[in-house]
Image 1 (cartoon, rainbow, N blue to C red):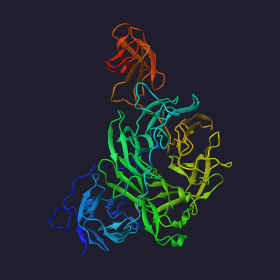
Image 2: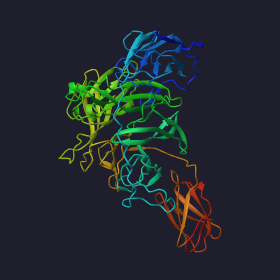
Image 3: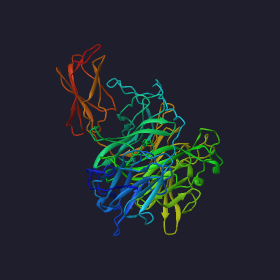
Image 4: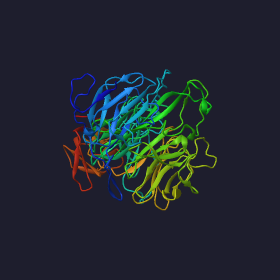
Length: 606
């Protein structure tokens, strides 16, 4: 007999104890057109969404089962049965917003088995009460080795006497026009012979904040977002095996204090390609998962390996899964432009998901690089609502709209889609160039029309990575991705108003953003005293410093304007001990350094 699980407490060994509340939130999205509120399963008919759903062909053996869209009390008795492992006892825990629950099995499922879930009520996808999913078979081949960080070199590196521990790559600014949008520049240097980590630059391209990561840790998708209505910094941090990531999502507040760590659920590793926070206090993340698969119909091996992608919506505070969707089973393998490999042990990567975005209606838009297509996913059923591009496009692709190997697909509040069109992945460019594009979708007529495109003045071709950020006052900020260490801003007329690149050879940034950011660092300014009665001062992360005031124990204070990350101030020969104060534009004190000894010759801290 299958095991029945309810929310009522019981001592029976196969029934769940009463669940405690998980932190969660109602789903509310704020867009440029106003406030949009959606409800999952909010119709008058009581229906529930179940994840993994019936299209899932390779779920994790450690998966939990999410029920979403109804008051958990309406679920009644839930039964979970594996075709090999039999009935599964476990714990059913409510989502705190009252719109769902998660069933956590007491033991894993068996590899390769089919699991049947009876929700005790109508399912959103097909109106039945039961849903099934298949558990992935076990992979016996060893995992790929992680990338090793290159030791920092001496070429193209920034050095600071006040912060000798920071050695980020130098940034060369080729264009910095007054017409550029307000805000800081967010990049995350990696892979080159330099320190790796999240990095903020000001409008002039000078360093504002840098956090070097230890060892072979890398940072991807670094930007400013909002969490629970407050500004935060977010990035993915972890180790990479070529293009597969295994790490966590970092969230810091405006004082650079940790707020939360985001992890993938159900036995998956959090991949580097995406970390989006929603107004509901959730995170959209993805995973890359290798499973055994028969690839003979694609011209590959019958004992082949296939890489599928899993996207999850995670409640940040509790870690609960509110949505899960798998590419394998939802997108046909025949839609891929990647040939199946014939070599033993080589992994077939037919999808290569690289972005997830929340649309105005609460559904999801994802980009799959290896199908040259963007997909819209129904949140409740997991079904595809449309395809844009690729072999089976729902839309007629009008002139200029065809894209290849794209990244960073985002729905706009005006019904458009923006994305970074890589165009090709083989160098040299041979007359081709990557571009940022905005495409208008007419869902009634099923047409896609080009609205605007942005190309680098030097005609860059970016084989991998890249981002396209539409700006509020029109125009765009573009990160040109791997092998092209450039980040550029264009105004509404398509003119380049900001253009910069890393000076260190081989340094990449997965994406780049222009976002307003103000911060209050927790520590005081850093000061180094040198020969010739000088001090050098910096304050990693401070955004409002306009000038520095040096207060000596003898003599008059001296004020000097901030000049980049580190400012050098020459003093009188009898300065003695000094304190350096950071001043804002109005002259108010933002922070004070420790007292430092300054002598005519070599000096030290006192």
